[in-house]
Amino acid sequence: MAMKIQFIGTGGAFDVAFGNSAAIVEHDGLRVLLDCGHSVFPELVRKGLVDTLDAVLLTHLHDDHAGSLSTLIFYYNLVLKKGKLQLIVPSCSFQAELEEYLTHSLRKPQERMQFVDIGNYPFIEPIDTFGHHVDGMQTWAYVFKSLRSCFVYSGDNGRPDLLFEKIRLMGHTGATVFHDICFTAGVSAHAYYKDLMGFQQDFKIWGYHCDAHLNPDDNTIPLVFHQPSFVG
Image (cartoon, rainbow, N blue to C red):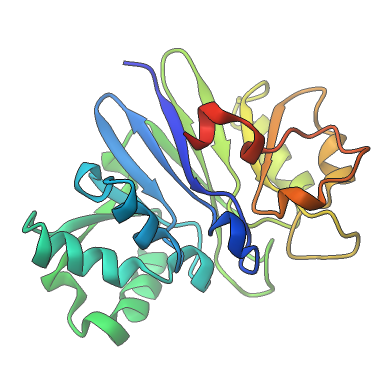
């Protein structure tokens, strides 16, 4: 079965019209939700997708990436009665951060959900991007691999040079990269579009986490929002 990605939203924290950036990756019948910001759960319900999820994987713990996770866990467990939703974790330290985050709303998180080490999902490789979005904050990018395709999901990343270097070192030159994109120069938390354009020679890059209406005329990075096969 071919691997595919379907975006639930393509906007940043303040791009209300586009929804928080999140996606479902499907591989060999498994469906993994990438990020679960505050607008994501309602959209999953509207599209009838909650019941199709097998696991959730987060890039970091900002509200536009994790804000409705507790609601999703409750819904999966109490309304759908599907048991404990699996949360894939790329490291023990990030699991501890995530458990503390969920404790404020779930009280005892592991009564409602289950942490699963990313090693149990061999088609996913984590890329540590600590501090590349906000100083001192743990963030992650992820590589998704199948026999026929390979793509990377950046999360929020203000240092595309470091991310692309790591992708090359992992042997994934030529991969499709879904990268957050910013149309304003000098924003350290996200990748400026002109900086991303410099990597197009070696990678197929798609921009997301933006207001697509602000797309500059000279931007050569195609936006996920404009591609029907990604947004469904």
